[in-house]
Length: 318
Image 1 (cartoon, one colour):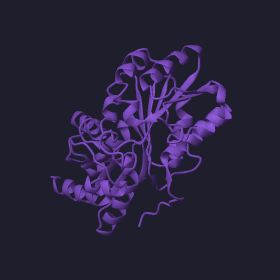
Image 2: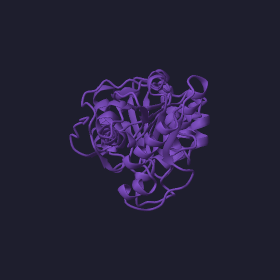
Image 3: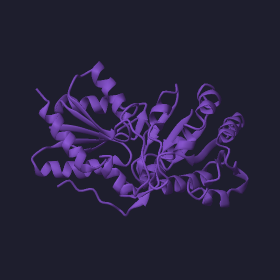
Image 4: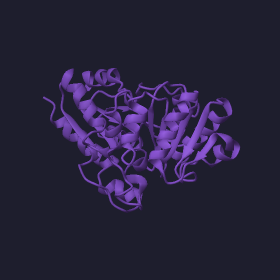
């Protein structure tokens, strides 16, 4: 049995709100912009404490990205906040031209990502955002797994010079990482050591991977579990070191299997160490309205499917 203590379920978006508030108190150059979703993004405390450093743009996400880009010229560090769908797909041209191409120091912070958005349905459940953002030159892409990690990432990206996409979610999920962790951009975290199969997970699938590893351990299968919070730049070495001993890998993400973490890993192993690979993710489809837990099960984004993929990939080893 591999023990990770859940300190109490909490939503990752609240971790963002807590991190933003702390930044407001410690860095006078941090400013925040929101597109009519201040409550949903947990930005109210920042707004109330620093009203002169908060801009409510309204339902005008493209305008918000342009304003944020402009604020960087005066050495401000803008944090934009809205749903992931409106932070990427709706404003891709503005991000590409005004932020990425110009290498502006904007932090694009996106809540309600993936299928766990739930009842709002497919129009809001963007499953392509990691792919869209990682394709932009110079864009750092981060997808956190719990409250504590999201808070730490929020604080850390303020120190990073250049555009960042920070993705987090709506539902309350286990909070199991260290409270005062040292978040390092581009550095994966080894959670469990094993020699039989590598499981590389991001976001909400990290906890599901821990559950899967525990169940596999009861079968005598020892999984090497890695938390990849930074999609780009990818921590290549931690993955290559792992598959050099396990010789097989399963990627897990709450995202389309086309364009996400799994594809970045597959490119890595093709160029370095060829081995069998399986993917856990949404299989080239849109989502639908429903309860987050039920949707995760229906779209096979749970521990049971991770276990099945692990068994399958192990069987493919020569």
